[in-house]
Length: 433
Image (cartoon, rainbow, N blue to C red):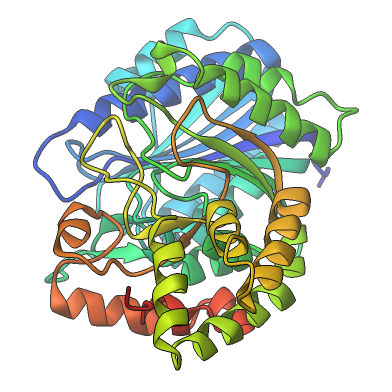
């Protein structure tokens, strides 16, 4: 049986429209995003694997787009066997894309590519690490490549997890924790080269630490990601030339996104969308300076004056109020460079030189590229539990329900960042001002 030749690049897209509310605005956005990805991939002759879970549509679509020519008869027979296996084991079955509205429109616009569409009418839990892992395994097999771009699209609660879905028949929905996401993304074939998050608040140190070994670079925002607007997929995919390596491709993708968020068409109703490129493999250089800073902040609790000074410095690094379009950050998140700068200003306190050392590593090594037009954002966020009623009410990241809050705290202590640095000791028990 012949082995399919690997392409230089392939794109995997996990696009989820489910949410807590009863509206379908994100459905329209994800459909437009998928159509734009397919049109750009067709022009660039790039293979794409997509899993699309819409709120108003029962079940899940799984599609692959590949350049023509069509397969030989022998290869066609082999693919038909594969289809029967997929149908029996996973409940996905082949459907004619011309019989589904979105995919019919996509197919009619393609000039150099063909679409294979599968559908599972049962309810899959999009917030399950197992569902994500099976899609990624499918995508790697269907679109073999030397390097991969992974695109996430959907709702997110930053360091507390992504999406909001439930198992079929389960009494309550849940989120996809960062621990489960990272575990699903790890592969014996090596890390994914670049992850693009079209998800709110994912540009966090928690996510970067958790993805170590699973991803090389991530591009994300510290703030809200606008639902409206179609990403510049033609420009993004044009960066994926065979000769470009992961680092150069990541920088090119980040520049395209920075330019996109510089224009009103990319911002939607928001006044700003910060965008950062994070070098995941450099995050472990944060471990020692952050652990030392945690110890110094813990010591500061014993002295009332030091506690108040450090507490004020941390509070002034909070990222806005998420319910305001003019300040689209979340008050449960700190901006890491701002936190370091504020603590450095406490010149006579032991935290000052430790904060300076942490700030240098974060800004020189971890944040590779960063864009924002204005506002408090400087490229990387970190969870810090809100201390005021106003911040608690305005936060998307911080759970309002007491049971959810306890669950989030238990989970947060298991994160790679917490285990490596002890930051959970500060984040879950803020210094009183």
